[in-house]
Image 1 (cartoon, rainbow, N blue to C red):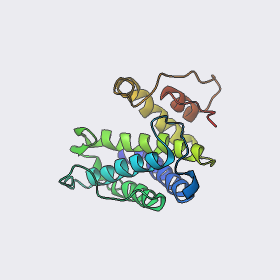
Image 2 (cartoon, rainbow, N blue to C red):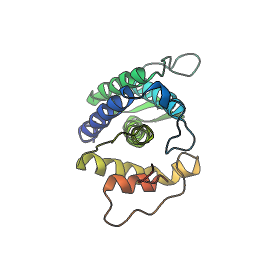
Image 3 (cartoon, rainbow, N blue to C red):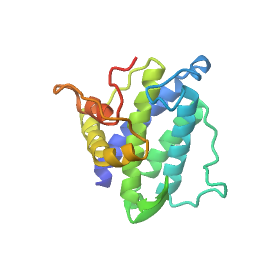
Image 4 (cartoon, one colour):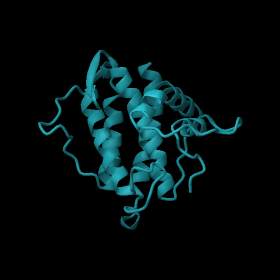
Length: 187
């Protein structure tokens, strides 16, 4: 699984980094497809999640205050996206358990959540800032598999909205967006 997961993670981290670097200061207050966040809040969430992911992959201790100590300017989110995927490039990162997000979990599941965060919130950021978010066919399938796997749990804890119906001919990525409660045609 690790080698199959890292290529999509790297593709998504690169797309997130490019998208984050393109965010303009006048866009920080704009709304996003993820109704909980403005662009600035989404950058903060994504920056914190990806910093935590990198720390989890490297098995580093959490900071004393429980939050990773990074800033969340667009260029910082770009850097932490690439740092997280670099940390998961080590096959040993997927072994055993690690502390990520709400607590201890299998490391492979932490990597899957990282991939899902990059995909969904990367798309949110791209859509909110008027950019495209290209995702290759293999990566689309990987994202859909993870989103389908965690959808009910994510919905129960407020991470996903009610599922939407995607057309039968929609791409796997559009199906993943719809499963997570997002409108793939959000504008």
